[in-house]
Length: 241
Ligand SMILES: [Zn+2]
Image (cartoon, rainbow, N blue to C red; front, side, top):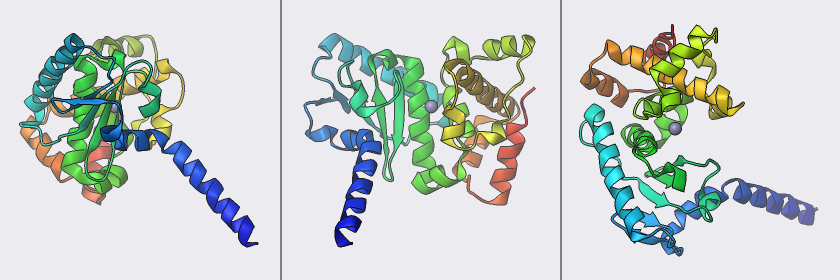
């Protein structure tokens, strides 16, 4: 009996480690072969020119997000992976931000070395920094977190013109209120996901068209799980046309 319990515990541990192995790899990047330079952990194969380019893009991305928030408070751990090491840290193919209780970890694949992806991921890190891990995890719906991140991301398939073209073609915007959790938001095809991003961004744009950045950031800073915050989130989600 005790042996069976031990086996179950072991199986559980293995399952958790398998699921969390990317977060674990990111946690231990400081003792890996990655080289720390200017606050970024670079895969050794990334050459000097690419490192310099990434740091310039990072400065541009910071300026883009700071134009909304003011001076950024987040100091995420940044990992610049190469094609060979990407899968160790992330499931996607461009950029991903992992949330930890103390800070965020931004992981960048080679295709994510550009200002749009960097600004998007920095926006996630900044929201986490302002709200803290518990409020971020429990009170912020995924559509809002992604909508606000993609607001700083100018890739064409997320922009207002792409949203408008879909609407003209007869596509109905997804009900954002049903996209609170990550699983629901990220389900489906790449095409569906892009429309979801564009829709979430459109709702944020509509909100910010009538709210100054300072009023918006003041509200974001006080966002909680309480009724008033959730009512305002529901109002923003309904701004799709
Ligand atoms: Zn995102």
